[in-house]
Amino acid sequence: MSDKFKYNYPQKLSLFRFFKDAEGVRRNPIPFHKRYFEKFGDSFSIRIGFSKYIILSRDNDIAQHILVKNQKNYNKSKFQSVYLSKYLGKGLLTSDGDFWLKQRRLIQPAFHKQKMNQLVDNMNATIASEVNNLVEERPIDLFPVMSNLAFNVVAKSLFQLSNAEDKFHRIKFIIEEVQNFLIKEIRLPHKAWWFSLSGQVKKHLKLAEENNAIIKEIIEERKASNEQINDLLNMLLETRYEDTGESMSIEQLIDEIKVLFIAGHETTANALTFTLYLLGRNPEVQQKVFEEIIEVESQTSNSIEQLQKMVYTNAVLNESMRLYPPAWITDRQNLEDDALVEFKIKKDTLIGVSFYELHRNPKYWNNPDEFIPERFLGEQKKESMQYFYPFGAGPRMCIGTGFAIYEMCLTISQIVKKYIIKSDNDTVHFNPLITLKPINVEVSFSKR
Image 1 (cartoon, rainbow, N blue to C red):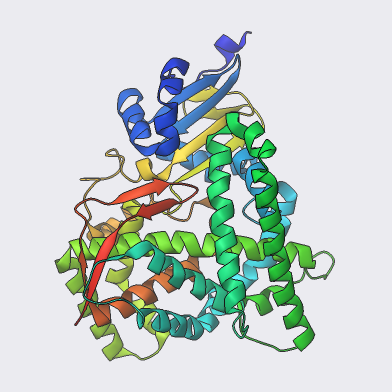
Image 2: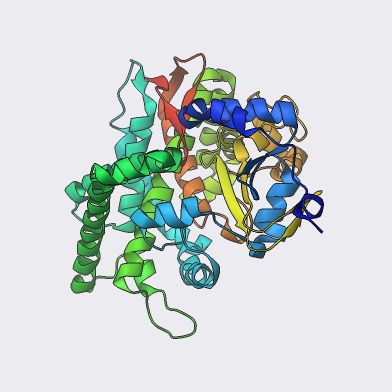
């Protein structure tokens, strides 16, 4: 039987249209994705060459199939496993198969809720220090401020007592430089020869090596000190593989720490920026958050108990991440032929799921473009959570979910308790890089 009859794919976007839109897609793919979904339905495909296909989808059944129900047949694409690993090494974010599973089982206990609870006081103190330095009474570009806050929270949670402020700043600089170049490599594959010839690849690989050396120095200082410190580095140093009882090698530990820096700071900074913007646009919601914080603090002074009682604040955060998911897209490639909902697809098909579009798909959400935190309260929450992917889904769901939610709720509560937030943008702009990065989102903070 020929491929023509054996396989069937979603409605196809013509290569002519694909190449015609290529430059616009490179700059910002989201408006084009929206237009294609409105034309073709919840999934469409592009044929590359004679037999290769790419599928883009905002269909919840497809998301569930590749991330949860048949996830063993789906690996991360080469974008993640090849491009990212070139600079980030083989950490949880870039690895696959048995090696990924072994690492996930090793690291998971360090992110258990009880372990995260031990980090809250340190996290709270770092956030308080950052909030105290907020510029007041005039509009500021919010993302760089939240990026700095989130990076410092991760740095201090990883390395609590390290006097390494200069090293942290250098790590942050390198991560941002490498990511910006990585986006160029992914979106402009036809310029690969130029990136190599002009020395740009070499330059960024050298930066990645410098990053490794900085982190290695911090780890070796800790090991030499023999101090038992309540931070993530200590938790990771104490982990042991089930089969051998051995700890991670220094090289592997460096790779995992790089992933925690990247995954743990930029996505959080994005989510905080969008959430504070939305609070500034919706003063009645902001007032409810303020009232909840005051009520919760009157009931208990324990930070963990306070976090557990911040039901409305958590709903606000969820609704913000629905509208502006920090990790806005994911992709997978099937190892074997598969029945993907009503489609029969050949192995090595690249499938992208746009969480940004799925979170706004009118099939799953009423008034999808409106900010309605009540979607994540009471009975409505059960319905909403079926179509909600701020941290992915399935076995590869973000390992730092609990850490991120703690950090974001603590930050929102500290800011709203101290300030009235006003947003100065009518519309919010963003750049869909590896994460959904806010652009020129201005807010002002006035003392309560």
